[in-house]
Length: 303
Image 1 (spheres, rainbow, N blue to C red):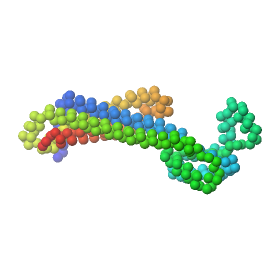
Image 2 (cartoon, rainbow, N blue to C red):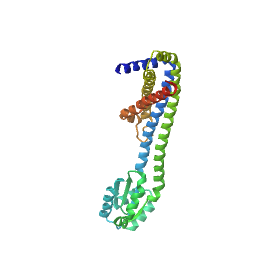
Image 3 (cartoon, rainbow, N blue to C red):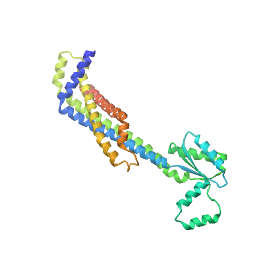
Image 4 (cartoon, rainbow, N blue to C red):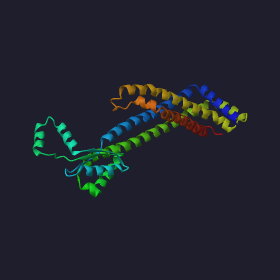
C-alpha cells in the first residue's frame, strides 16, 4: 500500500508537470478564486472592525431626575453591569454633566447667563449603557422600565432616538455576514465547475496513456489517483501564490489606509493572523483541487 501510494504521488507530480498549459490554466483559475476568498476574508476583517467601531459609539443614555441620589444611580449601574447582555456602563454625575454642558456652550453667553440665573444645577446624573450586541438594547430598556427602583428616578431614556441607528447597524451586520457567505460560496462553486473542465481536459489529453494502463491491468485507484494528486498540487500552488499576492497588498494598505480605516492596520492584521489566513487559503486550495479532481475523474473517467 505504501509503495502504491508513493507511486501515485510520483505519477501525480509527473502528470502535473507534463500537463503544461492545462496545469497552468488550472493554477491560474484556482489562484483567482483563492484571491477572491482571501479578499473576502480581509474585507470581512475591515468591515467587522468598522462595524465594531460604530457599535462602540452607539449607546443608550439613561437620564435621571435631579432628585435622584448618586448612590441610587450607582445602584442601578451595578444591576445593569450584572446583566450578561451589557458590555459597559459609564456613570456621569450631575456636577460632571453641568461642567460638560458649560464647556460645550462656552461661546453661548445667553445660555450660560440663563443657567447662572437658575441658581442651581438643572441637570441630573446619567448612565451611558453599551450592549454587547445592538439587538439587545430593547431588552435592556425594558428591564429599566420594569424595574420599580430604577423607573422611579429615571427622567428619560433616549432609546427611541437611537433606535433607528441601532436597527440599521443590526441589519448591516446581518446583511454583511450573509452576503459574504453567499459570495464565497458562489465563487467556490464557480471554481469547482471550471476546475472540472480543466481536469477533464487533462484526462482527455492522457487518454492514450490511460488506455495502456488499463491493458496492463492497472487498478482503478492507480489510474484515478494521479489526477487527484495533480489537482491537489494545483490547489496548493494556487494557495501559495495567493498568500504571496496578499503580502504586498496588505503592506501597502496598512501603510496608506490605516488612518482612513479608523486605526485598523491591515498589514498588522495579516501578519498577526497569518496562521489562520494560511490555513483558510491553503485549506481552500487543497479542498478545491481535491474535490474538483475527484468529481472529474468520477464523471469523465468511466472505469
